[in-house]
Image (cartoon, rainbow, N blue to C red; front, side, top):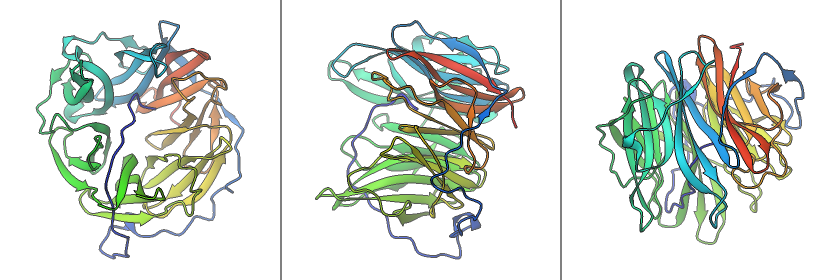
Length: 398
């Protein structure tokens, strides 16, 4: 889950896919694996060996860690605090950052004056040479509510400097991911076409695709970066309101292939956004169902998707990965009133078999990272309907 605002985007389209023998093997069509679970399979076993190592929160509001990354010998997590308040149900109070050198002991680090104009962290990624790069939404006209992006860089996860980047400050950054082929950035500003940007270092960017179509509105739901390239999910909506989902994949970030209806025919009245995570050279996605379950999908190329499993009771799924491990939970409909806590955090190493971590029911995952002491999860726990705590867990690698 990410502390971000919903953005409305217009105009885009992609060409229909066609077989291309020049594409890397990771983008060729793949046959469905016969080892996949039935779509109705609902794993129930619990996986022990995990423990809560830190919680943060002032109480009477929502504290959450939205992501965690490791660069060099340091873990960095960022998050936010929100409080009940205005017409939309909550007030954003401030961003937060925490650091750890081992994944066990966590310290909250006060934000310096370089974050005085911070609205929220859009994303944080590991940068070159053990550094961190933070992508921010900042305010530049409080009276009008106008925002712009800003980029900060840190060598230790504690002190930050303004980064030298060629991104237009007016570009509204939605998400940034890093994989073996580089960094991919999604920008989706109000009233403009969504666009994809590629970078080798997370600082210097090249626009590689802008969605533009005079007959459709286009929105991008999620992007992922893996070992063999990049994948995005989007929706093309016609002027009459009919829509079609598409998958968009690339081996190098520059040449893209489109696949319409990656999940087959869908309910025209129900369009929950899918979420995606890489698993080595493969891909795993999750979509919400009307019955408050999560449908899990597998793909070897980001274009052809096959049902892999189903987890009941996971509302609005959140999906993150670290190494060869995936983690999924419900979002808890944060930060509105939570009548039914989400049923905990699930883990998988193949997307087919999922086990429930022994973390308690009211837990939501925000990010995952791998370190020498084990796997680190950051997210939140929900002691009551009007309160959450930013929470960190440590578990085994295998």
